[in-house]
Amino acid sequence: MTPEELLAYDAKHVWHPYSSMSNPQTMLAVESAEGVYLKLTDGTRLIDGMSSWWSALHGYNHPKLNQALIDQSMKMSHVMFGGLTHEPAVTLAKKLIDLTSDNLQHVFFADSGSVGVEVSIKMALQFWQAQGKTQKTKLLTVRNGYYGDTFGAMAVCDPVNGMHGMFSNVLAEHIFAEAPATTNTEWKAELIDDFKHQICKHHKDIAAVIIEPMVQNAGGIRFYHPDYLQQVRILCDQYDVLLILDEIATGFGRTGTLFAYEQANIQADILVVGKALTGGYMTLSAVLTSKKVVEGIEADGQGVLMHGPTFMANPLACSVANASIDLLIESNWQENIQAIENQLKEELAPCRQLKCVKEVRTKGAIGVVELHESIDTVWSQPLFSERGVWLRPFGKLVYLMPPFIIKKDELSILTKAIFKVLEKVR
Image (cartoon, rainbow, N blue to C red):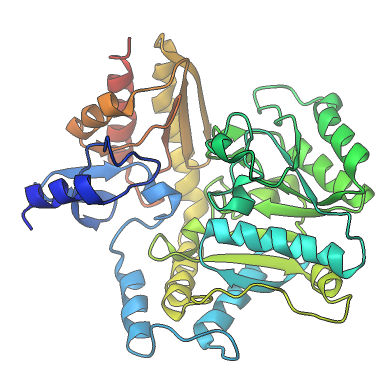
């Protein structure tokens, strides 16, 4: 197909995320990608400020990651994980166990972030079922959270401001506390009061708390206090509730530490990672858990976690994940992220003078410009593309989560594009 034919067929037949088939959005056709650049079929090159939904932390077409896939494909691309195992999966499990908190000693591999959340919820429910506490079937979470698009994950997304409100009559009903205060609010003990009230009132029914540590991502890219997360851990211990941390978006350095929970100096009972796990190459997630959770699930003598995806621990995905983790750890990732944060703070600051802007905030390799009103992506997308950048705002947020390898001048092109486009907002 010619590029024109490709786009025409796409518009007529291919469903894209969160989009309408009867009124399709205009798409850009990508021919190839290299470093931080997307090359379109018409030859245009765009700097990717999104890291392909926050996953391509090393950029695109990295030779070491490419080679990991090639080498593994010459051995086996896939083998079922039921009754069989393989070196890429075992090596990846060891890397993850070594990198995370000491209590996390067991790894379950899943297909995607959403499925990883489903597995974590299933673990928590089965933990209590196996111990005869069958009333503990609820989850406690906070408003403005986002955990994925599958049904278990949707049920703990914000029921009012989230994108899944139309399914509220069929989703499991869970318990929601007020969203954590953002880091521009001075920490006070009463900021945890509503969460404390909810867990005190409902703890006999609560199997687990699930929360995104330090950053509420797709629910508004809100940064909150480590003190809040510390208090959540204390309250979970006090009321005998498991703690699930969703590090799908924040894991592997995005917030300035390898995992965001490190900033609160706590441990999870269950930890979910994904997105950047494979450097943006393949879909894979991992659910890490403690001996306490494993022994709890096995308390009824059955000892079987009821989950098993066909492509669990896919060797190609595990191999590229191993290479991506090695690449990250061997790099100067802390210095790179600190440099990105410093530059984002400096170069996004002028946006505060624009009338359409409510707030500018940064954390690690995350930069956010929040507007007073939602931005029209149909209007803004071509303007960003004309300036040589790929940005995809959502709602009131124009944000950057660039690959860690981005150069200073490339990042400047992104930040300047945001200012110049928002200047035109009326």
